[in-house]
Structures are given as structure tokens and as C-alpha cells.
Length: 174
Image (cartoon, rainbow, N blue to C red; front, side, top):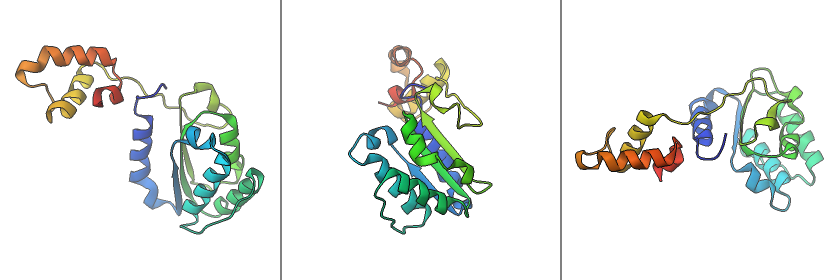
């Protein structure tokens, strides 16, 4: 879904609640942004390996070498992997080409704004929906007033703001 729906927030919550039950874990944020930097894909592979190998550094010189190193690291341990803000096939290829080698019980979560991107790799898709009027008003009120409803003399103004935000959690927060 589009930006501001809370995909990353949901993924972080799921990750933080579950990473301890896996033998290795990695949360790779802002993949779109990082992969656009020089050697960005190698940088992401290096971070993934560092995380799932519990802080052991591996020197990677190419994406294909990175794929091989990741394959070795994930084949023998259950891992939880979150790939946040994926927007291109080459990112998935660099980080998940070896997906058949993942140890049974491993879990992979991908957040993306591009619905078509994930069809060949993913077993389940969960679309994040916008908030309704009441949910929006409650979330806005928590951020604006520190309580679950607007203060008396701000009700109408709060409803106008909420309508303008169109149910986007990030817009309601800022």
C-alpha cells in the first residue's frame, strides 16, 4: 500500500515481538533508499549477514558472492527476516534468491508499496487498510491531546483534520 499506512510500524512490532524465538534475525530498513547508493545491495547483504551471524563480519565483494554467503548462513538456522520498503526485483534477488535454502520454520516479512512485486516469492499477502473515521479520531486524539478523544472545544476542528488525513496513520500523527 501507499506510504503512511503503517506497514513498517506493523513489521517492527511483529519483529520485536518474535525475533528472540529465532536463531538469527535481521530487520533491513529503507531498502529502496539504501539500494540506490553505490554498492547498496552489497551493503544490505553485509548487514543481513552481520545480523544473522550475531555480529560476525563477512567481507562481500559482489552481489553473487553475497547470495552464496547468505545461502550458507541461512541453511542451518531458523531466521526471522524483515525486508522493509522493497521496490525492485533486484533487491529481492540479492536478498532472497536463495529462498529455497531457508531452514524450515524461518519467516520472511516484506513491506512494499508495489503490489505486483511480490507475486512469485510470497505465500501470503496482507494489505494494510486505512483507518475509519472513529479509529482516525482516536489516533489523532492520542497524539494531539494525550487521550482517546478530542478535548471539548476542539471536537469540530479535530474532525476536520481527521477527514483531511483520509485515514492515514502517519498523517494523523504528524
